[in-house]
Structures are given as structure tokens and as C-alpha cells.
Length: 463
Image (cartoon, rainbow, N blue to C red):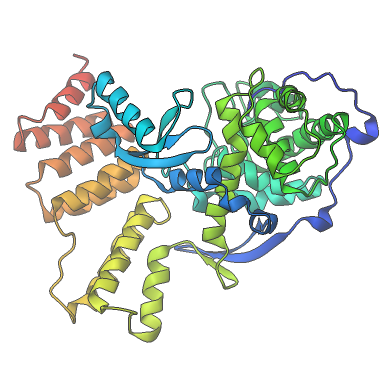
């Protein structure tokens, strides 16, 4: 969230602190089943997202795919409409010359009839950033704070899903911090302590208090005022109104007011929001236009996780799949493939940080036992398979679990230079320089030509 811009609209005291009708906010309660506990959770279910067709907008569908795409890939898309025309691997794309990249984009224009005035974009996958399962507890705690302050908890969920999902100590390049990404000056103005000794922006409840006050005192009333000035009718539980408030939270009410004046709408609704996505004013540009698009996509993606046809939300996909097998001792198709699919689900759970390595390897052994009576089976399948998981964990800064994984497979394959490189990388991420150097030496002994390890060793040794 950026610093709130000034806006020249006079607000009455009654308008400034008016509160939302909480009876119109749909809060759902379920049980979240994790690897070692079951917790009662709450979240928002927005029926208007589907009944009004927001989920079918190309922008919402586009960002949903980006949120599910790994960062090594990118979707080639037409700006504005976000029409997807191709998918590329960034490693291959980065090898191309500028001339080749331009020629490729020109071919896309010709093939799809895209005018020169419209940009062809490459948008990288953001799956590693949008960790929706990890944000569930934060949403539950924040909803309570918002409700206590008479602020629509829809905003709590929307902001937490897109600003810093599952992370409480993330500071942006402009200085915003915490799950609600509050700027220092804004947080202090809303009653939070931020100094060299403490930063309450990283405390979930206190950050939620600061964000709810900001919404209640500035974002919501200023959005009302700008629409009143344009003589546009609205209901505060309308999804389009909420999306406009989100824009005020992110870009500043002054910038959003400028956008509204530029559009000069006669009515609200989906069409107004779509016009906002195509309009610039002051600091309201591409990132600001995308903000409510991301909110729509995040709600849809989150619903795919929590809106299960039971009173429980199973956070571990491997358990969900394997338990269905155990309950009936059968599978909807070939049992061997089904059980191997369970292992793949557990691998994804580990990569996503939903389960620790100890739980992962215990569950894999359990599935192996089931497979033993059906077919010859060996896990892991090969060294590359383990490297894929381990180095993914390192890329997502999950060094402790990566270290456990590589340490486990060191016993099985002590002659692997990649295992020792992985142990070195994990040790380095955890801050143990001496141990990292020891592992890198073992890796180089097995593979003296490894330039990557040699470069890291040189940096560690100060050369």
C-alpha cells in the first residue's frame, strides 16, 4: 500500500466515521485440518463474485493462472484485455536477443491482429508468492479485529490475500511492512508504534487494527465522497464499491478521485471498474490498475481451497487424497498410479510449505508400504527428482526443510555432489558459513568442475 495522497473533498464528521452494516457481510466458519492440529477458521464468501460474473472476466482468469504458475514460466498476453496468447519458459526467453524478442512479439501481433499501440506483455508466474493456505490463520484473526471496529471484514481478507499472503515480516522496496503492507507514517497516524525498537506493523492484530482504522477513517469515506460528487449511486456491500475502496487503499484516495473525475461516470458497477482498469491519473498506473484484478483472482483461488463440500478444509492435499484411498481401500483408477499420485501431492505440500520434511517422509513411507504389495517401487525415483524438490525449497527460502531433505538422501547416496551442494546452499541460507564451506568442499571433491560452487566458495572466502 502506498502513502495516501491528498484529496480535496470536504467530509462531515458523520460521514468520516460511518460504519458498515455488518449483518450484510457473509462470514463462513469451518475447521482447518493441518498436519498436526485442527483449528476453527473463518473467512469471507462473496456470492456477488459469481452471481454477477466477475469471476469470468478475462483479467480475473488471467491473474488466477499467474497465481498458479511457477516463476520459471511466463504467460504472453495482450495488455488491457489480458488475453493469453502463449506460454514461455523464462530460461529460454532470456537467451534470446532483443531483436529476436521483438520479432516474436511482432509475430504475435500479426497472428492475433493486435495493433502497435497495444503492448504485448510477458508476465511471470507468482505461485511462490501467493501462498494462500498459509494466510488462512491471519485472515481469521484479522476478521475479528475488523468486526470489533465495525469495518467490513471483506477488506481484511482481500488485502491479506494480495499484499503479503502468509508473510508477516515482509518489507517492500518503498518501506511498507507487515501483512497489510502499511507505510510507516500511515501506521503511526493510525495508532501503531513504529520505531527502531518495535514495529507493530508485523503484529497481525495490531496491523489489522491500523488497516481497519485507515479504511474506516479515509479510504471508505473518501470513496463515498468521490462517488457522491459524481452523483453515482452505490451500496457499500456492492462488490464494485469494495473494489474501488481497495484502489484507494493501494494508490491513495486522491489518485482514485482523479481517475473518477477523468472517467466522469453516470453509474457504478462492473463497467466502471473496467474503465478504472484502463485509466491513468497521477500515481495511478499499471500496478494500481491491476490491484482490484488481483483481488478478484485471489478470492477465486482462495475459494478453490476453502469452499469444500464439508465443514472442514483439508490443507494437506496428500492426506486428502490418501485418506480417500484408505477409507475404501480402492481408487477411482489404477491403484498404483493413484498411490504414486498421492506421493506427488505430498511433494507439492512440502514445496508449498504446508508440511515439514519429517511429516513428508513419514507419509511417503506409509504410501510405499501400500505400494509394496502392488508393484516394485523405489522412492525417490532418481537424483534429479530429489534435486528438483530440494532446490525448489531453497529458492523459496525454506532452507531448514531443504537441509533435512538433502541430509536424509546423503545417507542413501553419499557419492552425490549435488546433495552436498544442496547441503552447502542450505547451510549458507541458515547463516552457517563454516558448515557451508565444508559441504561445498565435499561437492567439489566429487565434481571439481562445478563452476557454481567455485564462485560461491570464492565469495565466502572473500576472494
